[in-house]
Length: 118
Image (cartoon, rainbow, N blue to C red; front, top):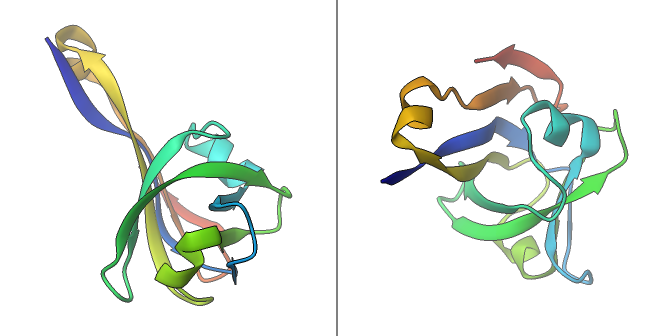
């Protein structure tokens, strides 16, 4: 049997830009994405804490150390700069793996600097 469990999470990420004239995705500063194990082009589920919107898209790595969280393409209509997001990815795990699995989670401030980790 396999279980779908939370793999990665960036909690309270602050949207820095929204660009409808882009092919689509969510740009995340590469250092933040890598810190929680998000791969470039990985499918993600995003929840907007300000308006309740939930949507799926994929990760594009942005410039390191810039704190970028940019809504691109159609997702730009689901939030605005300043909105706080929860960004999640999930993985399939065997029963044995599920028993010891611990997701990689960070909490960020309004400048998308890491202030907590689980």
